[in-house]
Length: 509
Image (cartoon, rainbow, N blue to C red; front, side, top):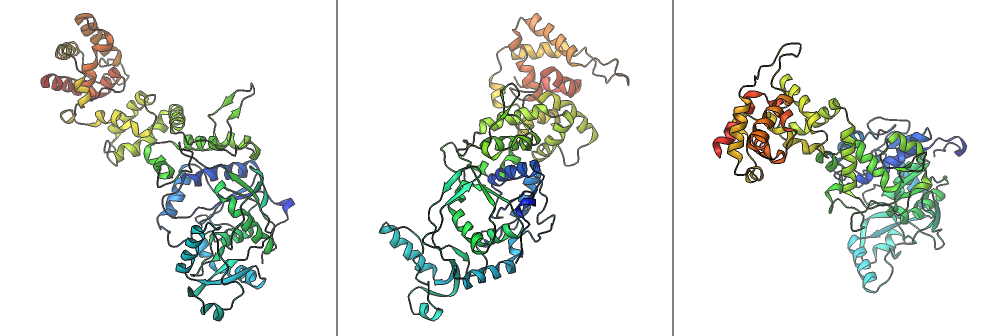
């Protein structure tokens, strides 16, 4: 049996232990943020452990999704299945032999017993309990019986499970780093080894936390009811229990715990697919439980880096009530972080979405990259999500004769649109579209020159108000009601494309 390092010399060791049963839950990232913040602050370790003993819900591709999404968020672990470490293996399914002696010890010491009840018998028992308004829980039919004695009674199955024998005086109160002194409901005789020989979560998590020398267990408040069971197992096995920190639940607008069945944004992959940047999501999730940073002048600051969060993190600051998952707040944060990115960084982050949406090919050419680099500064303040770039960027990469005019853009054209387009074509025709000299001189087709010519021709010449003057031109150039800055867009497109698009819309009116 392993002997843990004395508490006085132990550096904090925290773990996140998700189950690969589908798309990674946003709660996995939420717990990881608190784990990692404290571990980094205290010079400790952050461990990723895969709890894959639930074979009925196991999904093979989910494990890689866990790695990918946590890495995307920058929540990097020190030990784990993919990295190894001093307490490997870090997958429960590879540790099955580890748990057997502890289950046998609990049986030998009288803290656990075999149960041969069939699933049908247990279902009937629960149904009766519910109908008669009794507390639900195992009725201990198998307690104290041999296999032979139990086989003569109804609802017998050949493959037993192992159950904890919960004492009548089980301690229900414990100290929590966030909740303070906390009381949990009395547990029933929990199954700790299933009929297939796999340990349940309750046995495996206790054994693994001890053997991996975990000092702090951070998890959602829904696990409070399991804590007395886990503390009993630590006590029965003669081990020191870790400290517990039950963080507030992530709740939807109805104050219910968020669920992947009800909310697409309960899935971590959703945020990546929708165009959120990881810095914004980490910042947002930290604010779900922890207060904003306090500046020297006493003001609050909601925007902060993970390093700042880790430096200022404290368990006692966490609000046990938590916050409602407010996507408007997340969108605001995301917009802020997008504005703060360098143009080069933003271009790199937009590229996968533009490729996914068919705006750019898998291997863009140098001219395509050059055009994208010119467009990005025009849209950086106009998008809140990376996915919002596609309709703004797409018109720059579509053939002139393939540009579609959106219905709402065509409908908002005024009666003066043909006159405006005629005046624009006439005003722009004399301006050279040549690329100029190598030193940058001699370039005529510039945003400033185009704006000057069009204002003179349309605002002054036709007497149309400035806010209405350029709508038809914008529609012709981009096909949209809303676009990046018009004159800069025309400069990037070049004279030939701009003139073809103006003429095409004019011909259609």
